[in-house]
Amino acid sequence: MEKDEKKTDHSLNRLNNILKKLNKTSLIGIVVIYILLLAFLLYVIKPRDNYVTFPENYMHEFWNEELSPQITIVANRTVNDNKVSLRYSITSNTIGRGESADPHYKLSSIRLSAATVDKLSDDKPDAMYYFTELTSYTTPITNSFTLDNSSKNQHPLTMYARLEYTVDKVKHIASFEEPIMLQPTDSEKTEMQKVYDDKYSKYPELAAAISKSGPREGTIQFSLSEKESDKHIYYSGVSIKINDKKTNNYHIDMQSWIITKSGEYLPFIGVYNFSSQRDDYRQSNREIDKRLEPEYICCVLKYTTAAKDDSPKELDKQDVKIYYQQKIENLHEYFDASPKTEPEELDDNPSEKDPNEGNTEYLAMTDKMKTIIGISAGVGVAIIVVLASVVFVKVYNKKEEKKYY
Image 1 (cartoon, rainbow, N blue to C red):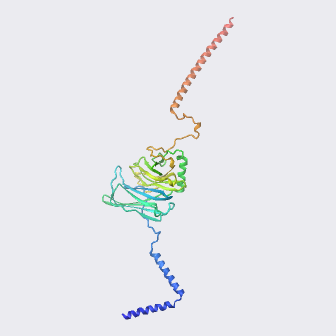
Image 2 (image 1 turned 135 degrees about the vertical axis):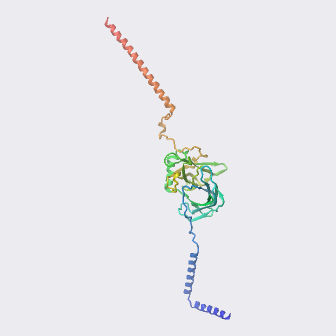
Image 3 (image 1 turned 45 degrees about the vertical axis):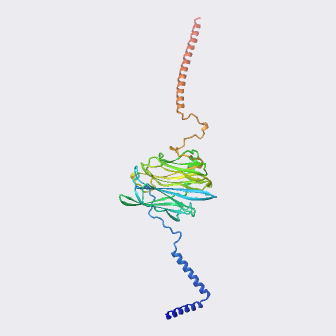
């Protein structure tokens, strides 16, 4: 025991003697090397803040033959003491495919997540947000989630859904990816402004027609109302109707924005993977704070269709964009059951236009009058000819009588 203590003392004395021989520069160098080594170790073992793992092998699927997970995102903004608070309400509505009734698939797991960005203008996600996993449900099922922005900015750039379900006692897994249109592109802004200038500013009662190239296949329209009890709030909604839901498979992604007087495009109501074969899409009584100074509502709707026997898997198949923009003050309180989508043709100079043009009753009466006038003119001409002939004969006879005397 005494030997061990002597060895320890000897080692400490030896180390102490070595340190005594070192000058200040050497001591500082040792301390610096130690600090650098410690910093390097911390850098290696500590996870970096920007290291985010995103889901892989998820697709923006056009059509799923068994399940349809529809996602609605509504941006709720309120203003208090000139401070804007934002909260995203996210609703997942999952139904089973069927001609008349939901086939009631058993869902053992529903996992919803979002790749988020700090700014609305960002196009690359910097974080993932995982919503609470849901288990043991049967379709149809609607679930609601919240993405709060009170403590930090987290705008959903891409939504992911992973569904585990059972068909004939066989377990299946379906994954879906839905890119969110947080901001319109410059070209989309130009197109929305163009349709407003060319059509919707002149005919505010019109709804936007959903079609590819021929006759309209559906409509989208917005509503707006007010309540005396809420002087700072507008209540708005959107309705999307597809005329024939069973002829073609279709997929709709729609995003709307509030355009403020300062020119900001604030996300409002968005619906992704709307493809119901039974119901129209409708949202109502969604709040718009007047203190945001909203001036317009606009939207971009991506409409994709394909015949059922094609079983398409690619989104660029018969894909078209629909644009709409309207002033807040021009929106109606109620949705029109049979909305107009095309303006009546109006003359550029209405003061010079015949007010009876296009009036079938007037035109029919005019034709009758022309016929009567024509007959009357013919009879008049005949009478004049007869009278002229009589006068001519009488004059001629008088001349002949004079010759005999």
